[in-house]
Amino acid sequence: MADREAVSAELTALRAQIDALDEQLIALLGRRFQFTDQVGELKARYQLDAVDPAREQSQMERIRELAVAAGVAPALAQTLLRRVIDDVVDRHRAIKNRLL
Image (cartoon, rainbow, N blue to C red):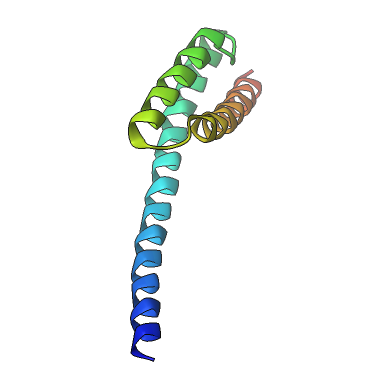
C-alpha cells in the first residue's frame, strides 16, 4: 500500500509541474500574440501583406533546429508553429479589415 501511495504522490507532484509548464506556455503564447498583433498593425498601416513567406520559412527552419536541440520531435514543433502562424495571419487580416 505504501508503494501505491508513494507512486500516487510522485504522479501528483509531476503532474503539478506539468500543469505549471502548461500555464507558462499559454502565458508565453499570449505574450507572443501581443507582439504579433503589433506587427499586424504595422503591416496594416503600411499596407503590407499579412503573409511573409520568407519569414515563415525562416521560422520553420529555426523551430526545427530549436526542437532538435531541446529533444522535441521537429515535426511536432513545426506543426505547432504552423498552427500559430496560421492564427497570426488570420489576426493580421482581421486587424487590417478593422483599420480600413
